Amino acid sequence: MELLANLGIGFAAALSPENLLYCFIGVLLGTVIGVLPGLGPVATIAMLLPLTFTLPPVSALIMLAGIYYGAQYGGSTTAILVNLPGESGSVVTALDGYQMARQGKAGKALATAAIGSFVAGTLATFVLALFGPPLAELALKFGPAEYFSLMVLGLVASVVLAHGSLLHAVGMIVFGLLLGLIGTDVNSGMQRYTFDQPWLADGISFVVVAMGMFGLGEIIRNLEHEATRELTIKHVTGLMPTLEDLKRIAAPVLRGTALGSALGILPGGGAMLASFAAYSLEKKISKNPEQFGKGAIEGVAGPESANNAGAQTSFIPMLTLGIPSNPVMALMIGAMIIQGIQPGPSVLNEQPMLFWGIIVSMWIGNLMLVILNLPLIGLWVRLISVPYHLLYPAILVFCAIGVFSVNNSQYDVYLMALFALLGYVFAKLDCEPAPMLLGFILGPMMEEYLRRALLLSRGDPTIFVTRPLSAVMLGLAVAAMFVVLSPTLRKRREEAFHEEE
Image (cartoon, rainbow, N blue to C red; front, top):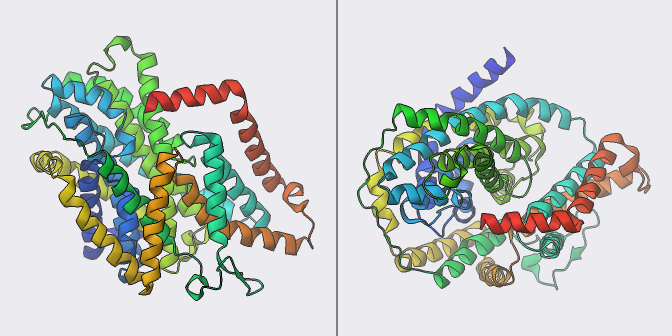
């Protein structure tokens, strides 16, 4: 009964005309940036963060959430039609989706992706509604030591699941933690690493880092690889799958949903990992594994369901614990902080309309996406042909105006350009920027909880291992590092990410 009452609060918030409009704007924008290869939800949300200043908190977060899961839908369109995944979670969809399109089954592949995404999004929303409150209640029992250990575990998990070299991932996290230290120390009031520059006294703005590394940095990387996109599928027909098709996709959709719901909670980009795992699972249990890579409909249904379920359940640690499971959730936490909301378990009790409004809006948004994606497929086909050299200058101007509007500071624009350059250099060095952003977000919070824990224990560091929950989480973090450092598992990890790419 309590769940029904809470869902009633959520429907009251999500069905207001204002929030319905922002939900629609979010899923529409998400679909558009998912369709356009080279842009993604991280870059788009980073660019839109300044706009959230002027919106109510519920409306702002509903819109940003819509962009995230909307991009999962839109990314499958280009993956199927032109073999260019518009979003990282759609990389695996391209393997069989594009082959289906070449065989004249583009409509069937797009319908499969839409149906799988809707079913997965709906079921994952129920998972979020069921498991969110108990987890938030457990988190209320956490003290400073438990929160510090939880954040250490989150950062270690993001290292384990990051692409490329482990050393690079650790280095990026340390770099993010150091960036988070810049500014005025809360306890002593002393300035740290500001080089006597007054504009650094409040630290580096999260918006500046996000828009530089993921907004402008993404533009620079993609301009270097602006290839001519060959649009071989100009007219899509046969959007209604047959009864036989529905029978073939039913089990992969459910398996992908279950796998994505579990992996989406993990730090480090669970949605992308889930899509790859779902594809591997379907290929292993299939009676005809040789068809995969040649147009198997199960190779579209499983991964698409998994990455959408993963996108939805990644909100669980963000909403209940205040811990971002991927870069998009880090941006969502940044948006909450901008709105004056402290992320964590208190959100459920202090902002029930926000918590349940976001959950209910996800189901409404998924319904909107089915209506948007299939009937408007002709529009998305035309949108794919937009030349990047016209698109990117507009994004550049938008980023500069957005960053300047936050603090009316020209230094923020210069810093954004610096982080854009750093983002490009890191890409060249095969250093993934996502762990850096997680470190930048969690660094100040980790320092605060570390100091609180040591104050409560009168400087005794054993508090982190004498409290059971804290000790368990630190133990898991140490175990995860030892496991991934073993030569056999490290080799398998590198092979898995190599296959995924």
